[in-house]
Image (tube, rainbow, N blue to C red; front, side, top):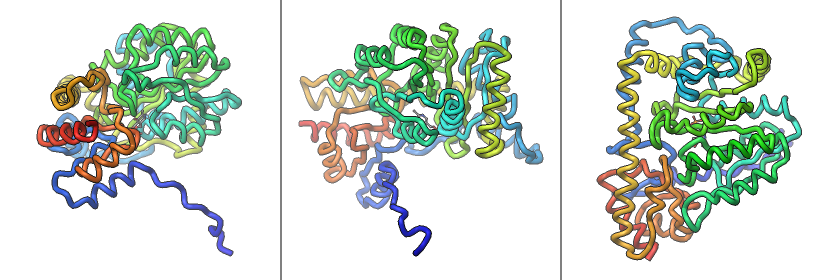
Length: 399
Ligand code: PLP
């Protein structure tokens, strides 16, 4: 009997299956709204000019490829801290925050989960309902039971804030709460400033462990504005975790550049926490890859490249907004009497359209437009060429 005789086939990743079906579809007008990446107006993943310049300079320098520090180079982790917490935050001079490079935002979540398993082994992790699907998998893989808290309100396309607060209030002390810092995936429904303050206070009152996931900094309002949630938690003085990613805002998906930051109570705590985090990393992959993180550090260290990056990021943000406006206008014109304000109220790359699985199926079979069964569409996959067609098709299946 083979060693693998009893191995079952794991379920396929639904989005990968969607991409395969899309690739095999011969219709020229087909559109893939199921993707999780930012596409430019030409329907391509951009290579940012700021990144390209930094990369060319690196190639010219032709540096040797030694191992990196376990937590990643200080030029990188320091840059991450300034983006998340603000360049002038006293947190940085107080030495209370620990940052380690992660293999993308995903890897950062996972080393955070593994570390938490050593610190609070018997607790529960709560993720939003719905959430990015991998949140559940990552924290289950780290050994935690994963439950959900109320979040999305289908009747408004926004957040069920009363439901969320009630859920937070009912959690046991030391529960880990995963919060999307901005541009909620998959719904696009974010909390407002005042709501963030309340959530931060609820975490203080309930002695919860907040874990902010920041995968889209700069995609909603701007670099600092999008870090508002992080800053509110900072103001509370309680310890919290932040996973962050440069996959989207630097368009560096395949380089796997992210970071885990942990805000602690003192320099001494930070030192001990970092020593444990290094153990987690050392036994996973020893130390992180150098190239992508070096590009990010180089861009953020140069005033010209940094300004260019901010301009390029602003361009991505403005294009997403323009696509939201365009989609909303077209849907309102085509389906009079129906409220589509949620399309522009939601933020970031994704929108929960409220389309049913049957309507999503019709979009695919009748129009060659591919979306996730939940009705999530990627706004960044829209462009001037496909916007009319997509809006007409959505209107047709809604009528
Ligand atoms: N967290 C959320 C909410 C995401 O949407 C994503 C990516 O889709 C990630 C984390 C992971 O990002 P990365 O590709 O950097 O691992």
